[in-house]
Length: 280
Ligand SMILES: Nc1ncnc2c1ncn2[C@@H]1O[C@H](COP(=O)(O)OP(=O)(O)O)[C@@H](O)[C@H]1O
Ligand SMILES: [Mg+2]
Image 1 (cartoon, helix red, strand yellow):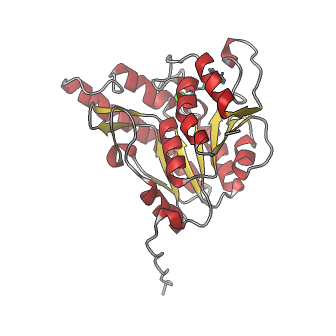
Image 2 (tube, rainbow, N blue to C red):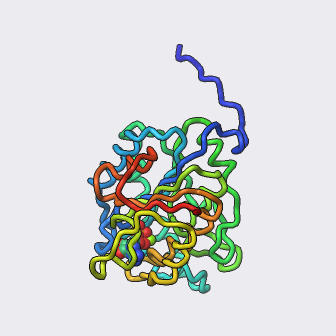
């Protein structure tokens, strides 16, 4: 007869033994952002292997929308809120479905690497207020972590108490979850080597290797909003979301998730090429 596992006692988040790490897998890493609905399956598979290899005891994973979420969100103006038309309702539904498809690919890759990930769909668990996440999700996350599961969330089309619905970015979710859980570290996996003094796509920018809160606020003023393939503000949106987490003393590491081993090293807290952001 199979041995029955003793159910873990219900726990409060404050009872977690170690501070969790929150990982963001950028949409531009896990998809080809300029080709609608195309996942980068080899990157997804490799990242799942790296996450398994890193062996972080308490991990929360959030992924972006890339070419699955952003084109539909843009087409139907989901971020702007409900306009009263039934066609937009179908767009809300389609945006969530596309994100679910991408999420399922990531979940499958994680499970394949023996990572017990469990998806929390923001659309069915989070109601934002004017685009901001006000709800607490830490108790839910802590219960999963306490059991040894790996919560998996993603930027999604969510209900909004003022706008009807909107887009909740993966970046906002990362910062919110990290603050609520008092995370040890946030690891942001992007397609560039880290934060640059100017957009690396516009020429050779200098990689910023270490960055203080004050420098991050300065950079926020210089970085332009990129909206071509991203309805959540690109790097400018990311920086804006990360500032409150850094203010709380959470270390942020921005690394190139397209290059092997960088995410693995950052998850372990090892020295890695990228940008390390600390309060001071
Ligand atoms: N100063 C900067 N440092 C790094 N990346 C920048 C900067 N300014 C603009 N970017 C752009 O931001 C992009 C990352 O943001 P985004 O496309 O939203 O990524 P993700 O898909 O991971 O959310 C990079 O591809 C880069 O071209
Ligand atoms: Mg983005």
